[in-house]
Length: 250
Image (tube, rainbow, N blue to C red; front, side):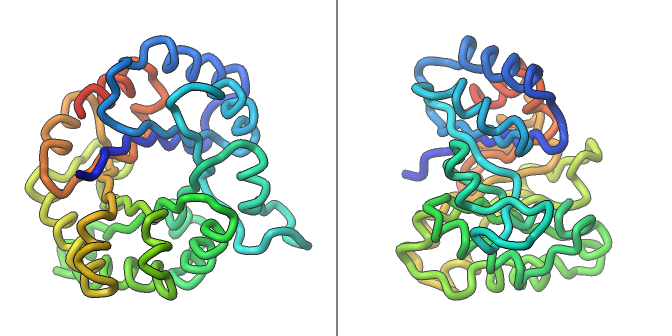
């Protein structure tokens, strides 16, 4: 049985004070009988403070990205060692915004995943197609390329620390959401890709999250699907009540 994950990606939001207020509200109101793993992904500058505040709680912390080298002359970059030292347990890699704004390529996504695993961080690999790619019938080749190149060189054991997030680019921050059927079909497709690249056991165990305008009013429909193992939540994760309602949907 795959344990669901509800992860909140705060993106470039929250000062230290705002971040601490948010996680204090989450800790206070989080259900005691959790059916899911909960992760928050704050900006780099608030990560250490958030991790300290969450010490002893059931909420884990993830970085929003990392560089593939541990240290060196890479101005502006953050390494896996730094994330681990700041209190992170996981890291988001290959988010569509990084692919778009920072020109992230599948090859660098793969290098970052290897770096994360080397630093004992779980990697959340983000994949997904644009609206133009979907309408052109390119969903399968686009996502298959992102998955297979992103996971290149990994072992079956490595895959125990990999989480995949399917985020159709056309649904991120747009208010549009894939229907439950669309999301389920994409997740089943991704599981099949993983099976071809590794084996059925790995495919059966890997957790695949849905991301793309997940909100309290659509979370239950999405999370009820057999191949959707949780959600990577954007804007709704910045509101404690909304994020908790999504968590309760599990």
